[in-house]
Image 1 (cartoon, rainbow, N blue to C red):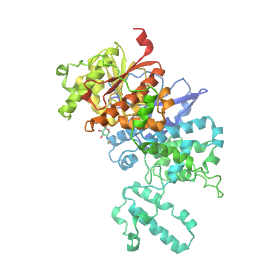
Image 2: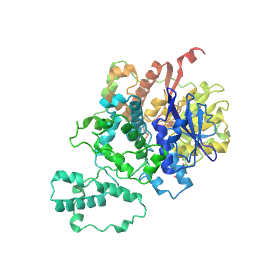
Image 3: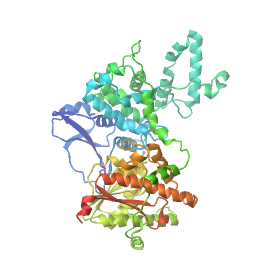
Image 4: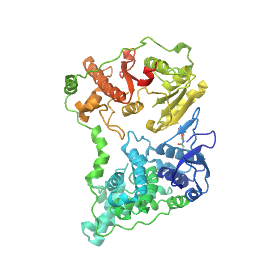
Amino acid sequence: MKAHEKCPVLYLEVHNEDGEPRLPLHTSVVLFLLSYCDCKSFQVSLVSRTPGNCETLETHVPNFLNVSHVGMEFLDETGRLCRAGLAVVLRHIINRTLEADPSRNDVLALLGFKKTCLKACAEVSKWTRLCELGIPYSVEGHLRNPSDLETKLPLPILALEQHLSEPVKVHNDDKIRRQKLKQQQQKEKTQGSSDCDLAQTNDRLELDAALAKLSFDADPQSAARESSEIRKVKTTELPTLEHVFAEGLYFTLTDVVLLPCIHHSLQTGTKNALNCLPHLLRWYSNVQEVPGVQRAAKACGITLVTPQPPSSSPSEPVEQHGPSSLLEREETSQQLQFVGGPRPTLTKLKENGIEAAFSPHPCPAWTLPWEQLPEAINPTEGKMSDVRAQRKRQQLNNLVAMVTELARPGNTIVDFCSGTGHVGIVLAHTLPDCKVILIENKEESLVRAQSRSGELGLPNIGFIQANLDYYTGPFDIGVGLHACGVATDMVMDPCCYGFIQNANKFSFPRSKRFQEILTYKEHMILCRFADQTAVQLPPERRLIGKQCMGLVDLDRSWAAEAHGYSVRVMTMEPESCSPKNNMLVGRPRRAEEGK
Ligand SMILES: *[C@@H]1O[C@H](CO)[C@@H](O)[C@H](O)[C@H]1NC(C)=O
């Protein structure tokens, strides 16, 4: 998606299978949100790889949208800020809707309590990953092969069912839980019922609370105080709340993403399979009660159906441990207990002849002419302290030296995880014959980068707000300064080490030789201690930290070498410029041989 001055264009993908155009789920989700928001701030371009008759798609596009059909074209992103990836684009649609009409509280509420709904990128958040990638792609896969679904439900769907079955924690839920207790007690009195009935009779309370929040004329004072008997009950003894919507009690952007996905999987011959997912079916019917959802769906050609209540004799209960471990694996790996220090691991590597080794720096004294550079390039600009700015300049000297050595006129250089553009902007200024593209997930940072570059009038720079691994365009040189953890490994297909964990794309250790010697856990110990290089730590600890950092990067460099790169691991000059002072420089081996 690229931003024109006034009416930005939204490029949405169309699939063409056997000449039959079809909207992929990501496209359906975006159209559904536009419809729900009644958002007229975009021009929509439906993009197909192959030409086809797209008239059949018209019923799926809300009438108020201005739509054109285009083939694949190369966008020139120079000078523009483009946004890509489902979550980023959806959040931007919400932003635009609110900019146009600040009174849309229902749209604002989609961002959730802290306005962070789907903000953390899929690389770090299991929840974003599930909603943005897991569920849409698995449903997509099963739509293409409906027979699969008869036999096996996709794992992400099971994970969602498991999630919906867990109790909800919301901010300030005490009051709602006391109301729930009161209702339960009243029901018990009137019916004298057994426990098992109780579970089925209280299921409207959460939904009513959620819907009340949506109607903004609700008067918070009107709720009467509970009786003292109810007020005295300890919080820990109050009943828990059930999921009404995907993130708890309130309707958010995640529900918008999930609705077209779950709807489509219900539409295929999978009804039977999904019938053993009672929480998902209840969610599907709750969503339909949200004002505006039915209308929005209809405008996109989606006819929501009333789900059949699960058959009285429940079929095979859903396997409990599978999906739950799917969602939790990540958390447990973050919380791995590290017993003991890194020495056993270091010793094990040493016994196998592996030790950290650093290549000499080719130009330790090289520096940019900082005094002559425009203000907006110099990292003194902004609120950085003098010492920090000095170190930043030293880090940039190292990076720019390496890139300058590699760059040829006409090259495209991508700055992954660009932040506010310290690296990318210096490069665009220093190498006017190259094009520089900044990729960053955090909107605020990228907007700042764009305005700094605007001040400088740089003609050879572009900005993309996206997860770095969504970038599929061609490039000659990729750089990253302190790209966090897993991101470093993506940039090489340098920085925090402790954050490394098994992401959706990689397994660790990366290289074959390390894999033969170290377990995942032993490798994580290296990463964890590689993070302990801060200046305030005792020198002994920092030395070990530097060794670990060298080994993690050695593993990375060997993995890259297996893919045809020759890689040098170096220490930036001066060493004090950053506690994370390792620098990896890789180049395709063939290019080097040709020199
Ligand atoms: C929309 O995004 C811009 C740029 O990040 C931000 O400054 C603005 O406050 C946002 N508007 C709303 C209504 O959230």
